[in-house]
Length: 199
Image (tube, rainbow, N blue to C red; front, side):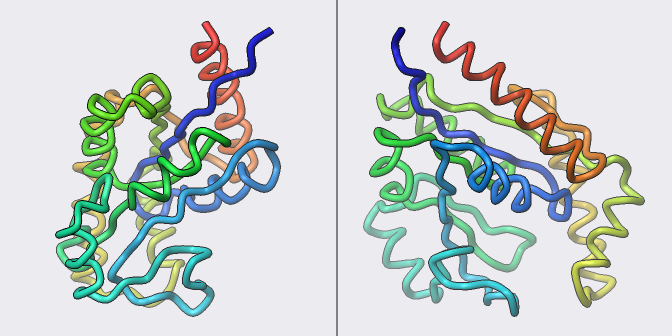
């Protein structure tokens, strides 16, 4: 029987729904997965490490890579910091292993468009949206992540509403509950995606 093709599994959804936790656990618990390390111009949080959580770039470094055409996608998020996925982070690894990453909905749109022009990506994208249980729960989660100004919280909640409106364009949707239930849903959807990839 032929081996299952490798895939790029993308998790999207509002900040605070647990996308990073799901990505980390998938890599830890499921053989054959690596996490795509994306780039950002935002400063690291206290527990974050450059090269493990993100590639933390200065604005000039980001500009240089952008001018060189090194990004698969990039976006300015929450009107403040830029995030992007380097082509090398995906295309150099995808032939050997499945990859998982989390990006915002703009990034998913850009990667879908890029996949139409990159044979290695075409047919290997699996998109999954993680939707909050409710906007009130999302607000609590965002406030629980650390100090956030009322203006920043309002901006993130507004962004969340725009993102949630796109959930039906994804291959699969997880309606967030507990961390354990979310992970079980992720595994179920990945099993379905594998059957489609080999079909």
